[in-house]
Amino acid sequence: MDSNRLIELAAVACDDRKAGDIKLLKVDEVSSIADWILITEGLSDVQVRAIVNNVEKTLREEADLLPLRKEGINEAKWALLDYGDLIINVFQPNERKFYDLESFWSNGIIHNLINNKLIALMDE
Image (tube, rainbow, N blue to C red; front, side, top):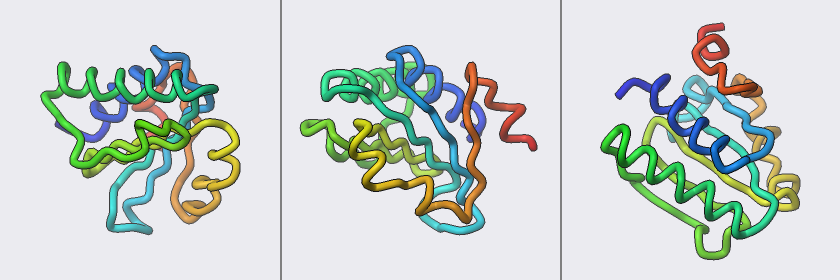
């Protein structure tokens, strides 16, 4: 599956569970761990789990993909799904502010995702 479709499915799955402030970071030129990092947030542990579960379900059903690694889902302060080319981070707001991955990956290209208009943003 190409990265654009994977990102689109993941972002829509996040948005379906009312994830906030979805950002996509293109890090392929500054890191070997992934090409893309998606960062978003949920307001509670219940919402973080709902977002992560929906992403996992959507990518399993629509793309026949399982995450290579999952972290933090039980605690649900910062949950991570690793799909190889795409790493998905779902934070609660305080943890997102504390870890500030957007600044950490500031050498990458950061895109705000609005209404899941992904292809146009990625083709800039």
